Length: 186
Ligand code: GLV
Ligand code: MN
Image 1 (cartoon, rainbow, N blue to C red):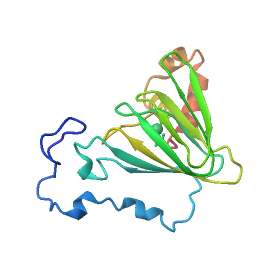
Image 2 (cartoon, rainbow, N blue to C red):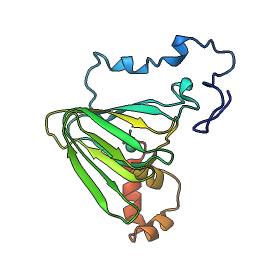
Image 3 (cartoon, rainbow, N blue to C red):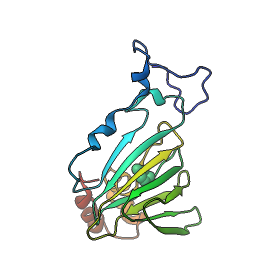
């Protein structure tokens, strides 16, 4: 497949070789799985990015649908290649991001609200409600926004414990406790 990602393209669209290009090619049906499905018990993120939906190649857009059971958090993360525009469809949601001066911006969203997370900045969402789930759709200004999960990228890799202990001004035992808690879970 010709890979354009988010580069400007000089054709209307990019089709992978040996693929029939018709209406079906431009249709993503992966979200049908949501219709009538039982409510999840953990955070669920369904993506429609270039990986799942090849017709997005070269179009600089993608979506994610996010389901937050009560009490769940989408841990701090960044998208290196895109801003994110979140539209809260149901429930309420605490959201926040941190700018490059370390200033935190927070808001409690009501259903119908939109919130923009600027490109590349660390952000999170939290459904603080004790009973009600929340559901959101996020649009990204990239066909492949990428996600860098801070807990996962920092602690669920093989970065040396000593380096992490020095970086976080703590001891190796504490780092190992954090790693053990995250292992395979984020
Ligand atoms: C939410 O912030 C997401 O990136 O899916
Ligand atoms: Mn995000």
